[in-house]
Image (cartoon, rainbow, N blue to C red; front, side, top):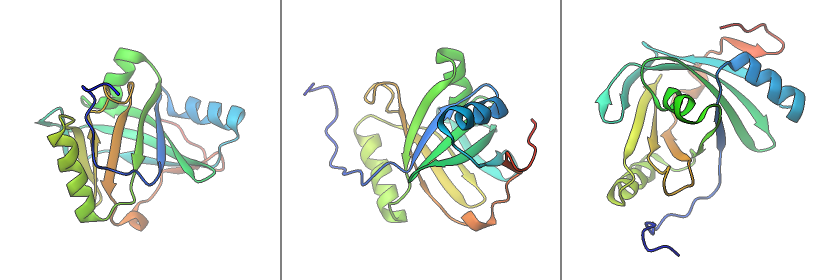
Amino acid sequence: MDPAIPQLEIELPGIDQVAIVVEDLKDGMDRYRAILGIEPWTVYRFEPPDLAETTYRGDDVDYGMVLALGDAGDTMIELIEPTMGPNLYAEHLEEHGEGLHHVAYFGWDEDETYEILETFEAAGMPIVQSGNYLGSEFWYLDTVDELNGLCFETAVRRNVDDRRPVAIYPDEPYSA
């Protein structure tokens, strides 16, 4: 193994989410529905004021996105369209176009999650984006060089039942 690759003492129990950045959310939902049969899509707006305490590359910034969640077996598929502010999703679209952006695991408890964040940062893979959506905290780690172009996301999920989707597509119409 390449000695430049950090050796972390982490065992990832699974992948909860695979995320794809798209230019147009409705188009993305239609494509993944038609080709892979993924439906329904639960659509959410992650924007201020519900999305708070947001950081991007070390700076406090406001950003937002509209996203759709669908299931492929036990794996959550997330489609993300950036809507405002500088963020990793808009950066990805500008540099690479649409495509696979990150994988995520959400199953660690709160203390474990904070320890995992410290482990990544100590190994030279800092937090590059974070936020708090209705009490749930999330972090993206700069693993792009180490994981062949992918970010890794983890979160402490709270108040998940308080989230209200803007649509359940295709049963409910969705437009930007």
